[in-house]
Image (cartoon, rainbow, N blue to C red):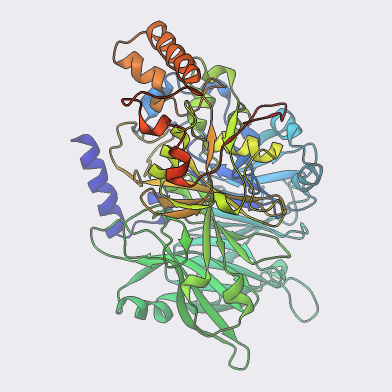
Length: 616
């Protein structure tokens, strides 16, 4: 009854148009792309900043817990599906830094923080070494003396944005406007810290400023409210910043006016905006009573001759359907309701928008290269590609569970699991397989099973995976055992293990990887037939993180001792090996017959151990 009531209240909150801060959920609320590979993530579900490797399927390569560890939860299990809040936690909602900054800046709803670094994040990324981030960083509150104390800890701070060159930094306050600070010298008495934009300046009269970003050119500051985007000038004809003199000039773009025709005039709400070339990409959704809508992404075009924005078109997501986690084309993709921060991945090879998909506890890559480069007035959503960076490998339990195996793990350690793998390569090895087909194929190798995401990451790094032709540009596609299920969290923790309030239980992740482009994950319905290869992992290696689904834990719950299970498995394995080259009796399961290969057309599997030695 309590969980049902909580769900009903969440839907009511959306209906009543509560502010973004009141329905944020818990998860990756703030993101900062360091370069085209690494992303800093402020995750409120675990109260930590993570460094995520977007080219390795979401591997966490660095982390920093924001609160004093004496304020860790005393019972981690009590936070599973409960929504219990932790008042002593930072609860980050936004993150920013610059290429040469020795601080990361974070906002919570009431406070502003600076996280001191031993060297800038970009230097760490270039060296591929974030060890100092975890061991040497320190956090402290930061409230410049020139900022009014009446706004301190009032619950209305929103996003922070820092220019990549460190020339300016700004913090949005949803009721007061925008404050400035010096990201290169964040001292309490900084002369650059001021209240530079007040609500009412230059037509900025909405009292619900949420999104905040510098444009790539650094000529404008983008402010997004629930109905409008304001482009505030940061550079005049002399190259000076007008805000330094409290001179506010802004262009106002009414989003509702341009986009609500997509839903027959239904009222809409928006949370954030980024600009790529002549296009503004905005996240939002129509307000449907009683529906927990997942967001959609829209594109508007700048017409230089008219000096106006026009042509709002939908490029990804639905906006009408409930929260979900689905990848694929823009038309197929689905998001949760709670993303409020998007960013542009700094890449020379593509135009990719990163979405902090909070309720799905994942990052989403939205490749809009074709809609940007083709310069078309209209956009075919099928030309947009959406994938996932799934970094959340039971991280709440890893950080806060006091029992084994959790206390022996770190977020970096759970990203990889070693052991033996089974696969076969070549064009003849590609088949249209559902998740069930791939699982059946793995059962042919005896104790093989579909690999988990950490196992896939480890094998990809070692080069132990099937390939089409051995070319570094060629993509390999395999099913993984990773589920795409998630839920809305009101407090830190993880979704309920009984599946209550969750979505996506019938979806699994597909791994696509190539040596040159890295690894991308795609949430796909498990019953969908996908052109893929077989890649299986053997049992007996390091523990799989999803302990609830393990054979041993299931046996323990059923009252069966591991001392009984293990001998049975070993006897069955020994007998299977003994019968491998012998005539099979009529009762012998067909899946274990040698001629099963003739039924499937598959070539023999290859078993590869850690030394890279091959066995047939």
